[in-house]
Length: 119
Length: 113
Image (cartoon, rainbow over all chains, first blue to last red; front, top):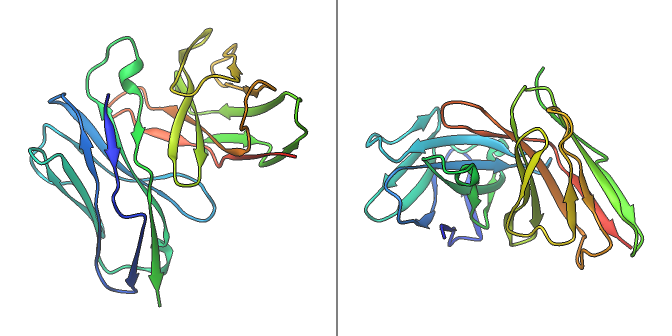
């Protein structure tokens, strides 16, 4: 079974600084998707960024970028120029690429990292 | 705007009572999901449905039931058999193409008194 591990329960960063959130996963598959979701105090889950495992280039979305290390099964999220609105719980998630009866569309989530942004 | 609506946002229930959480989407997505969120536990899958009139158990289905009579609706019933029902419940639907990204509702907080 796939597992996703976020080893940092809490992180803090100064406004305008850069922070990196860690995520590792375990899978025997070669093709899959990885996601970072953000859950602010409103508790609405928001997709931050996604990465296809077959793409070597790291995904980037404005101030958010990932460092995807497939061999190490590592998928860290870097937030540059941190803003107060970035304060949230961040979840890393895994999904297998192929379709097999529908069950492989299931997202497996890590336990989350609570990010605090200090002014 | 397209999205997912969950209701109620807050719900209180006495022990021994069943309660139904509503989830409605207007994104025209085929697949829908229910997740449970507990502090320090991340999100755990309760049930999912790939298409109308079909659904499968997730990792923690015991004490829950669902129905999928309409494409837009995927209600979750928390039964009295669920031993620890107090939690935050999230409904999601899935894109039908590409990376099949999940879109989430705003959630429902259930408290058992």
